[in-house]
Image (tube, rainbow, N blue to C red; front, side, top):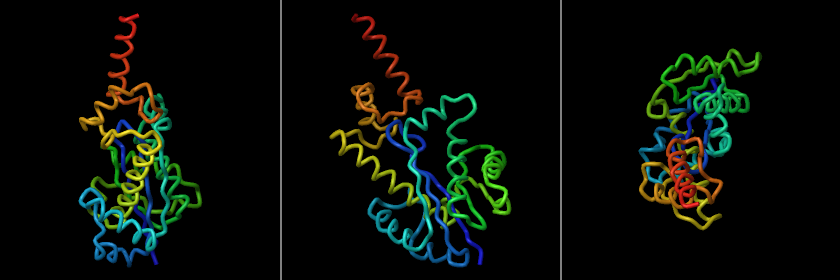
Length: 218
């Protein structure tokens, strides 16, 4: 029996809220069952479908989910020795160590697939160096086990966003910089709530413009 795992994330690009990374593991011979149940890349599913499959996947697969908050993302992006890809790789390695698969497929965020793969491997302990690590672009589209991880990550991210909206009693759309509702919210509230990724250029431009305006008024 080969224990097969898949890793994917949700929320790399938003200016608001966390990025979520998930790992799922199943007997490789049973991976086809995920596909037969309708598991596919989370972006191809409706919210209702994702919520339903979330429960199915949690019951079928050993899994673990990590929520990476804006402060940690900002620290990685602003660091001279790290970036968002390496941050994702670090958490991916931790998830692999927690689940201990024989083989793992990652949806690679980097243009340099080999470097990303080698970095994840380098973060595994000596007694796990025989784990087969495969990184691919569009792995969530090509591998049901990665698609399963994408669903867990996406649903968790959506739930985290809803928690933020309820906690602060605000509405800001999807949290992505291209969303008009999000743009307006950032413009009006950039200095109010601790939910923004301050390392994003979109945020920096707004903050700089507002600060310069305030100085002018002073």
